[in-house]
Every structure is written in C-alpha cells, then in structure tokens.
Image (tube, rainbow, N blue to C red):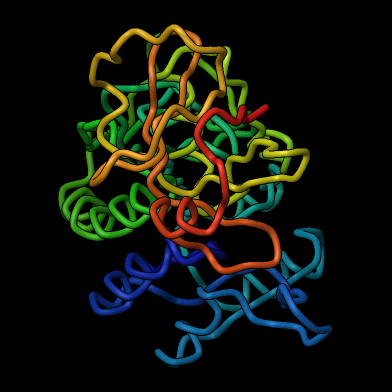
Length: 306
C-alpha cells in the first residue's frame, strides 16, 4: 500500500512518522503555507515541516481540482489517508484511490465535523476515541474500519486530549493496516460539530459547575474561556480537579469570587455549586497561577465575574 497522506496540524505528525517508518507514505498533501500569529511571513504546516525532514514529497494545492488531481496521480499512490487535513475531497479526487481512510478523533457517529475534541470535553463525555473510516462524500459518514475507545476523567483540556489522540493514533492505525477488516456502516444517532469562535469561550456562571468546568478545559489553549472582571476580560486557563466530581452547593450570586483557596485556586460560585480557578491570563500580561493574580488584585473576594 502506497499512501497519499493528507494532514495539516501537529496532531497528525506522529502518525506521519510511524507510517513513513513502515514505508507506507508516497507523498504528503497539506495546506498551503499560511501567515503566523505575528508578522507577515508565511509558515509551513507542522506536517509539511516533518515531511521535508523525512524527505517525503509535499503537495500544497489551494483546491483539489484538475491540477491537484494530476499532481496527486503522479505520486502513484493507491490509498488516501486523511487526518485533520481541513479540506473536503470531491468524488473525482476520491476515485483515484483504491482505498481511502479518515482518522477522526471521536467515537463516530458522535461529533462528526471539525471540532470533535473540543465537543467531547465541553459536552462532558465520559469517553471518546479514534475512529478510522472510509472517506465518504458526506462529512464523516463513511463506513468504519475500527475504533479505539479512550476513557476520560474530567481533567482533560483540548490541548492534553489532542496530545493523547496524537500519541495513540500511530499504534492503532498501524495495527489496523496490518490486518485490515472490511469496513462496517456506522450505527447510532449522529451529532455534529462546527467551527469554534472566540465568543464560544464566554463563560455563563449561571450554568452548572460541571458545564463551566468543561468549557474552561475545552477552550484551552484556544479560544480560551473568559469572563469580565470590573468590565475587563479575564481569560481563565486552568480549573482545579475533575469536572465529573459532585459540586458543593453554592448560595452566592453566580460568578462571585468567594475566596482564594490554597492548593485549589479562586473559589467561584456557579449556578449550582463552586469551581476553583487555578490559572488566569489577564490582558497584556503573562499567564499566571491564581494565587499570583490574587496577590496583585486588591479586594478580589466579593467581586463578580460576568
């Protein structure tokens, strides 16, 4: 099997390395170079950087039309594998390959779409996983080759869960390719995810503590959960404990900063209990732990986050 590997972000780099080490990769398809967070210089995707390091040919078309199909065909790949690539494959592109695979970080048909890791945390799922499916014209609707289940403990952030998926994918996918079964149709009621915006990080402290806890974790490192303190945004980047733990009942107005608890953080009332904010990122300052923030903010207890 000679694979055209379509991927872009950091999450897909370890699998690229593993597939290349086994001699599976014929070429890499990745997103065009894009501006970085600062400055105007165009930066390559993490997958492109690794492919160049490994001496693998790279293609970066803006679209997957005729010219891209011709270039892809020149690499003589008989299989296509996608892992968080970022573009939709049309029927003419898919028709060039005898086998297609999509590595999707959820238990399909749950959380189809572009933000499954964020959704699994924000919705309080007790487990997630990695699904390898055939690529279909509909979003993540293809038949399933196999699924790896990953239990969650309620402390995961988007960053840590992405790293876990990235680390688990190589072994799982290589084992599957070594003894490839016939794909089976998906079963169950599908759910869908969409693009995440900065406003998705806005905290509503009237919601239950478990939901606030989950939003903070799902939003790290982006878009970062936030609330207003004295009219200014305060980004909340860490929360103590597990979101699956039962919350002690609260009586204060939701959003009230009750106290600073050593070893836990800022005790804040929510709709049905308390959460403990362990790290914050004030605008124009560095991220810091809650204790350091409390030491530099006068009369913090009693203020309300809105």
